[in-house]
Image (tube, rainbow, N blue to C red; front, side, top):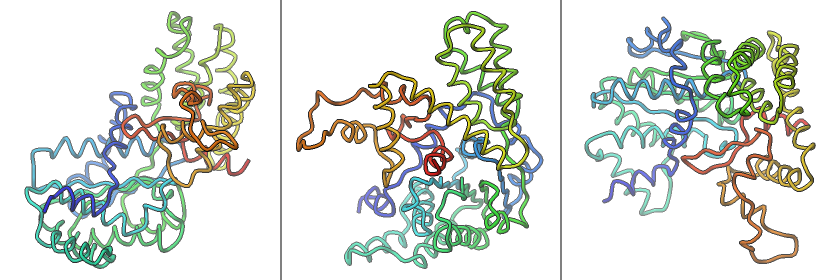
Amino acid sequence: MDNREILDWLTPVDYGPELSDYLRKRQPGTGQWLLSSTEFGAWLQNRGQTLFCPGIPGGGKTFLTSIVIEHLTNCYRTDAGIGVAYFYCNFRRQYQQEVEHLLASLLKQLVQDLPEMPDNVKRLHGDHKSRRTRPSVKELSETLESVASRYSKLFLIVDALDESQPNEDGRGSVVSAIFHLQAACQANVFATSRFIPDITNRFAEAASREIRASPGDIQKYIEGYVGRLPSFVRRDEQLQREIATGIAEAVDGMFLLAQIYLRSLDDKTTPKTVRRAVMQFRKQTPGSSEDQKRQILDEAYQNAMDRIYGQKAGFRQLAESVLAWITCAQRPLSMVELQHALALEPGSHELDPQNLPQVEDMVSVCAGLVAVDEASSVVRLVHYTTQEYFERT
C-alpha cells in the first residue's frame, strides 16, 4: 500500500503551502519578542503546557503563529522523538474545520514524520476504503492518541480559533478535542484567537500572552515595504523616517492597519501628499476597545473602496467583480478559477481565452484588499475583517 495514498485519504488538506506563504511575507527578525518571552520559554520547556495568545483583529496573530511553527520545526528538526503538528482555522474553509478534519490533519502530519506507516493507520484505511466510508471521531481520536504516544514530546499549534464554526459541533468540539489529546499524551498546546468569551473562558486556566504587533515589528515591516513606494519616497530618507514613525504610532499594535496605510501611499505623487496622508493616519489612531479598533479598520476599508471607485470605469468594474466573487464564493478560489469566472459573459456557453483578465491587473485594481497566496495560488481578501466589512456594508 502506497503511504501517500493513505495520507491523502486521511485528508487532502495540506497547510504547508499556507505556512510557507506567511513566512515568505514576514520581515526577517519579527516575532522575536514572543519567542524570547518568559511565557513562551516556560511553555517550551515543560510538557503538557498550554499557551493561549489572544489578540485584537489585525494584530498579526497568524504571522506570529507561523513564526512559532517555524521556530519549533527548526529547533527539533533533527530530533525524531519530538513531533510538531499545526492547524490553521480560516473563515473561508469552515466546511473543513469540524473536529473530524482537525483530528485527520493532525494525524496525517504526525504519521508522515514517522519512519514507517503505523499498522493501526493502515488498518483504519483498509477497513474504511473497502466500505467507502470515513472514520468516526472516536476512531480518529484513538488512532491519533496511539500515534502521538510514539513521540517523547508533542507540540500542537492551532491558529485563529475564532474563525472556526461558532457552534458546539465546530469550535466547541475542536477545543474539546485539543484538550483531550493534550491530556492523553501530555502535549504542549499553542492557540490563538480574538477575544471571544466562549473561547477565552475555555483557556482561563492556561498561561496567556496577548498578541499585538510590537512597535519594532511594525517598524521592520514598514522599512521592508519602502522599496515598493514611489521613487521620490525611496530617494528621501527623511520622508521614509516620517512615514515609519507616523504609521507605527498610528496603528497601535494593528499590523493589518499598517499594511493598509502603506498600500494607500502607493498612488501618492509628492512628498506633501504623503505627509498629509500620514498626518491623517495619526488623527485616526484607534482607541483601546476592540469596537474602536474595528471602526478604524472600517474607515481604512472605506478609504480603499473610495480609491477603487475613483479609478477609470474599466478598472473599477474589474475590482468590483473580483471583490464580489471572492466575498461570495462558497470556498477559496484559485487564481485560474477566478480568471475563468470573470471571463464568462452572460449568454455565452464557452470560455473565450481572449477575455481572461491578467492576474496582476486583478490584484492591483483592488487597492490592497486582495492578496494571492503564491504557494497555493489561492486568491483571497487580505484579512477576515475585510470579509466582515463587506458583509456589514
